[in-house]
Amino acid sequence: SEWPSHKAEMTLDQIPVLEFEAGKDNFEQAKVDAVADTIRDLAVAFVPNRRAPDEVKREELLKKFFADELPKHLQNFEVLAKLCGNGGSFFVGNHLTWADSLFNDLGEILLNFDENCLNN
Image 1 (spheres, rainbow, N blue to C red):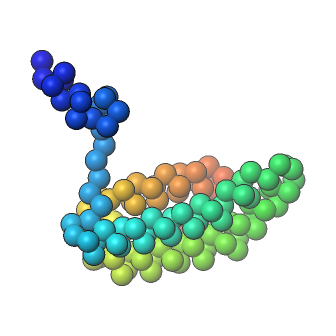
Image 2: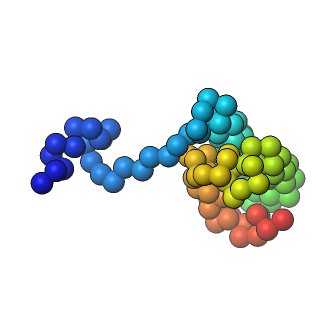
């Protein structure tokens, strides 16, 4: 069928392939990058707490992270959503971007540690 002729077009010579728009123009692309960089900031703040070698220390660090640091990061996301989201359900414009997917992935990880962390 058609697959052999399209296989070479695929980055890893396999399917499925998920493609996201990064923005309709350079300005939207910059907004998507800003959201992704902010998600990275959250991940950088979270990961060392999660990987603390001592279990008691890890629990202490995670508790502090969820109480003190996470709310600040979530405020940043609210600001970005208001500035870039055009009143829609996504961070930038009215369409899904890779930054939305990235936020969803990190959000799922955070929820595994504290199921109520995104409630407010």
